[in-house]
Amino acid sequence: MNIIHRAETRGGADHGWLKSFHTFSFAGYYDPTRIHFGALRVLNDDKVAAGKGFGAHPHDNMEIISIPLSGSLAHKDSMGNEGIIRAGEIQVMSAGTGIVHSEMNGSNNEEVCFLQIWVFPDRKNVAPRYDQVKIDESLLENKLYPVVGSFENPAKTWIYQDVNFSIGILNAGTTITYNKIKPGNGIYLFVIDGQLNVGDDVLNIRDGIGISDQASITLAASLRSRVLVMDIPLMN
View 1 (spheres, rainbow, N blue to C red):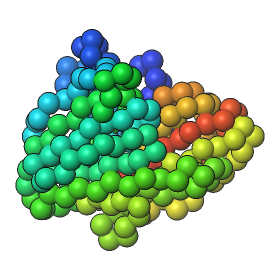
View 2: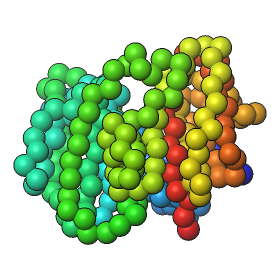
View 3: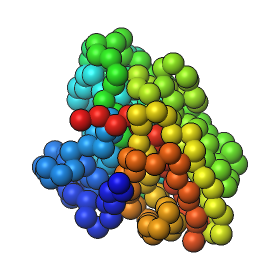
View 4: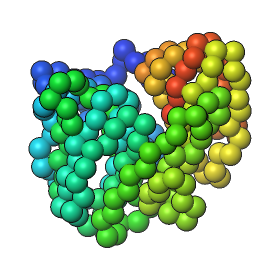
């Protein structure tokens, strides 16, 4: 069964300095039919004004992935990590027993746009950890390139969950098939830019689709498209 979340149906908030779109229920947005997709709990599409950001706040027992799409994020946490995450990089944190961190726009001149993703972990109260990696964009051309994996099978970065996150940049007319869906997992696909077909479904920029009963999926790009494919455990 496919569940499509059109970009315009997402929840949202406009705080002036922050414009955020929520694929799943978050903060002041609540939809009982859109709490999570399997272990995928949060998929937020955030824009933060220059010089602004999220002050120090806590998390625990959650896997957190940040993917800047443009601009830069300034990160600081209670583990002693401090630095800048730029477009083309991916940051992961295992909150585990508890962390405090801040995420500020790394620029005083331009906004930052980034995806913030939360995943339920497969174990609780682990020691908090942090990882950050830069992805060579040439590796994404016309393929799905693994960028986040599980603890048991580390990819470029890893989290405490049986996942495989891939990013691809597909030229118009390109068709590719993803047939590595893990047993017991489903796919949540998010179109960052462009337009593509997933089977018979046409998806546009910032549309998402959850697929829970297929052994493989085929993507056909109508326009040059950037896509995030999350192979993730299905759970109640």
